[in-house]
Length: 236
Image (cartoon, rainbow, N blue to C red):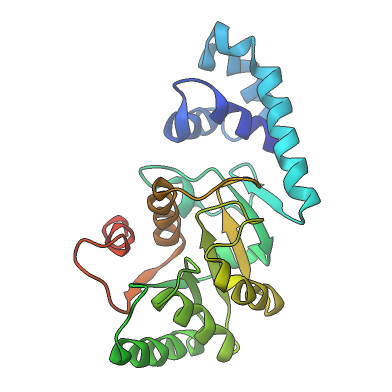
């Protein structure tokens, strides 16, 4: 089933929204989807669909070799809050405790260069959030995101890092140790991107919508009005 979902997203002029509508119309039933896929994607794409499925299976296997699993919209554990946003999230590659994506959570995000008072305030607020039983969601970025993740760990809480790259390519490199600490303390790393995916600026906006969708609320430690942080805020 997983490769079927990824294969749909490889089809020309389909995309996340149309794929979600197709899955929903077929009541999340793989047999119904296989029966109706030709009509959905068209004759020319249907001729390539077996190749797309093989490509998807190869990607999944490459991730598996790297210790990375996948969860898709076809899994009962996949939260509706991910696929009911305007640009639906239909799958996630992950390492660690994927069950955290269904926990109540707060995104702690902001500038990479916070002022001292913002650092202190973010630490204080994050510790209170964790003690209330919420997971902390961030992007593993320097600054406010790092403070949120580290505060969750320090306060024996849970944290999820949403990555703008494949999970084999932790960015920034300087936070590789933090990523390892997140996994060591029952946290989770997630990404829409397969192994071998390099970082580009477009990935950040895609990442930000996942942070927002996973979270019940967003705490901005510090950010300028036109910063990337505000993408997540405006989505929420």
